[in-house]
Image (cartoon, rainbow, N blue to C red; front, side, top):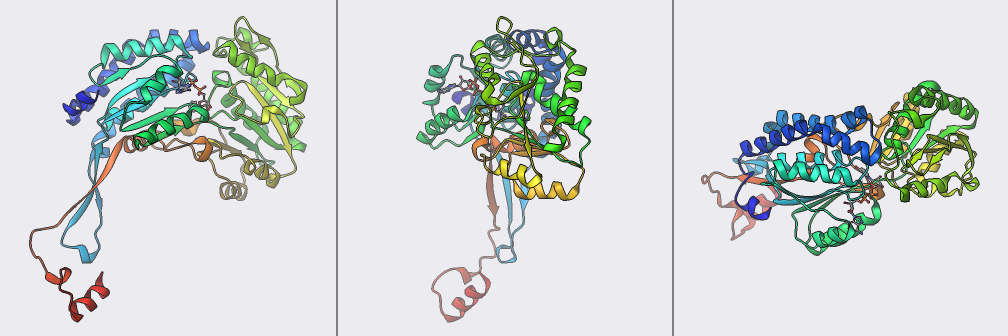
Length: 447
Ligand code: NAD
């Protein structure tokens, strides 16, 4: 891939366009096998496979193709009077050969969306899909090898293969996954002084206040939580709500879950499965008494890796379910006295990837924005901020560093190279020694 880059396979914008179009065609051609792989790995429905993975990625490609000329264009930087005549530009240049390491929960989108950005910016790529979603790993690997092997190399395997890969020198490493491995990636990158983007996770809170419509808030939170059986990095991890509203909210959640998936979600083709038994066991451990009372759901079928949409109430402050990102269909409801109580709870934890607020009060919205940090904020819905192509997506602190989607992705995989021009003439001597009293005074004054 490094040789391919040196040979200039993507140097010409037309080559980048061609690579993006080939990716678009490949995804369209192989849509069926990608959909089937997602069903095998995660029980993903066809609609979810389209909206959150395949169609989502095609949308990113279309957007990149439409915007590429604008993104590539040198960006004017104004020069102060003392530096004129002259001009300055930021010239986006490709980084070289970059590495994209992806996780299993959206195993198409999280490989291919960074790939779109990296190709648009003119880089060759080495991709490492997740071995935890093996059917999709095979499908994505085959697709890239068949259609884009001139600009993308694929490495398969687990932690060991990734460790070997990380010994190589890349020009950028784009890692999506958990913070533990994020640290390993960053340590390996430090060896070559390689910049990294870390797209991590965390416990993303959803605050519901008295000004919200409780039924709508419950429906939107249930949708964002139980899509992909809760295995979404920006899923609302837990709900913070005043005690007075908790019962109504729980009842509204039960209605929403029933509307979405019927009385027995196991029979719904729209409800996904847990990726493997290791993760199912991890989630089952949240269904114990030290995590509160199961208000909704709690059914498990190990053979089919099924865990029903589950809601926990009366969750003790020190409950294990509040320690780490849940990353599954278990939703604890934490009651608070007021908005200040909710904010104190959020501030006591690392910065989350997303923060959701359900409130129609502008004052409350301002208060939450001012008092918290998070990767992104979405007011009065869940997940949809990811679909806004030009809103950068990424974390802060423990939830990651750097961002992508749309132009932010193009910039992540580009070096915005500052270039300045001066005309050959005039060449006033003011700048050069010797510095007599007059020159010194003028320089002190003007520079
Ligand atoms: P995972 O286990 O598939 O790991 C991700 C990648 O890291 C894989 O390709 C894997 O091979 C590699 N890996 C695993 N162990 C390694 C090691 N010891 N050394 C080197 N490489 C190693 O996925 P995961 O980490 O379980 O993914 C879930 C996490 O990802 C959650 O925390 C979730 O919030 C986060 N996530 C974040 C985003 C985002 O966009 N910010 C998106 C999806 C998931």
